[in-house]
Image (tube, rainbow, N blue to C red; front, side):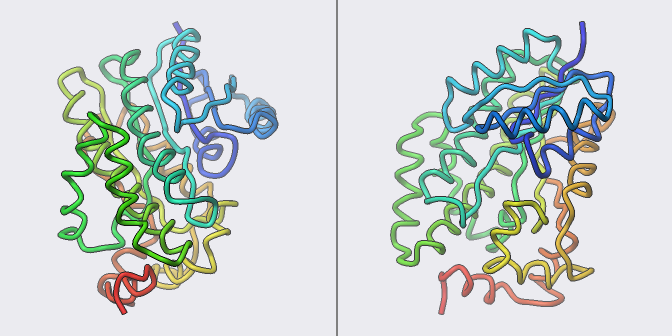
Amino acid sequence: MANVCVITGGGSGMGLSAAKFMDKEKIIVISGRTESKLEKACEELRKEGHTVHYKTCDTSKRESVRELAEYANSLGTITNVINCAGMSPSMTNPETILRINALGTVFVNQEFQKFMGAGSVIVDIASNSAYAMPATLFKMFHPVYKLADIDEDKFLQRILLITGKIKNDYMASGMAYTLSKNFTTWYAAKTAFDLGDRGIRVCSLSPGLVSTDMGNQEIEHGGTMAKVACERRMGTPDELGYAIATVADERNGYLAGVDVLVDGGSTRGNAEFRKSWKNTLEMMGLVS
């Protein structure tokens, strides 16, 4: 039976680039919400020699994710799941960001693991925004994060209470994005320990600012992160795609329960060498 690699958000950007670097012996299933984009991506991948299928999916809806998992399972043995689906602050409101970025991670991890076995891997794509505040501040949200498994509505309500206090719309969405991506790193680690005894490897990967359609929408507000990177630039989709495909490779069997930060050094530069945490907090409207 053929091995199957599933990539949510695979119709463009990092997800599509990751698909290009996957083993051509695998069947690739890409998903997203826009069918025309998925059709175009499939054509591109087939020209490069990949066997690829697509299925529309809204990762903010558990039933949609379940249908994607069942479809992928019907094609072969699911060995790789890369959850790239997500939305950024410029694209939508705090609740939608949380539903797609945070709860989408929960749904993907929970629904796909039902069909996965020893030696398989899940990679959840986060963001270096997961490091936008000191770890001690993020740790305060861990009790809220734990609600995602037991009470999705309460999980959303608790975080929206926080973002609702921020009057600037972009900053409110930015806070939701930051928390959703920090949650992703936390939840991927939690899932790694939940599924480790079954031999299913789970980790997260946090890109910096990348020159995709989504990344380019954030330049006005997040462009300073590129300026504090080692080479003072954004990453490219292919650079991140290769990194994601490498992390998702089964041969990386001991890479589990951690977040892989692929941001050109911008997080370290922001914290120590070129900027301060206070500047980031000011940008998010959390301090004056």
